[in-house]
Length: 251
Image 1: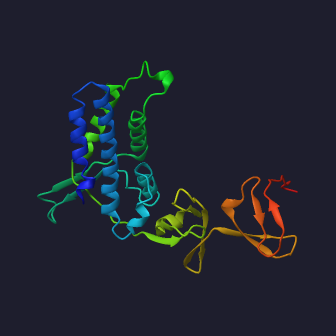
Image 2: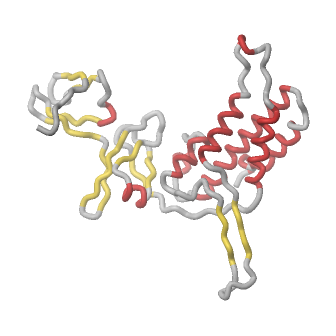
């Protein structure tokens, strides 16, 4: 682990800044606590996924990364405890790791971030940073320094996004319990369907739509089928506009 992700330093600096009451100190304390959360996420991310290309992580925002991993690993945002003992149970050694729930991480991350911006002109006269709220977050984050990092390795697999070419992570457990997965590049987010065929898993982002002009099938990304989107047949000059229709069912 590099010093760049030493979360202890960030919380220590925040603690020193919170000894003061001026606006500048409180604002920089918020910044250091955001750095702390980012370091906590990257610490777990990089330690627990050595087999995943680091280029995948470089595009993930800290407050979204753990949520993403929670799709595949239900323990990724949980406190963990491991007991090591003799075969007869004697001389137990307890090792614990304190973590933070995704919803709390996002809430703290966004709250701290809201104090890093200059107030709007209409609010500048009465603008303050609620120190009591910041201290409460600081206390909640302090527990993340207790214990040792515990990583349960997850067997990640990946495939290439059919639209943008980005690497999409998945696990066998995920594909067994879901029928679709999105591209994890937030600039793409293309939906891929999960299909099981002869014991193998297949991913596909396109559907076939018949063209009334040439009577051939158009291969269309399902995610592109948005209201008023234009679809062009690759086999003839005909184009279409996507609009919903109502069809009677049960008759």
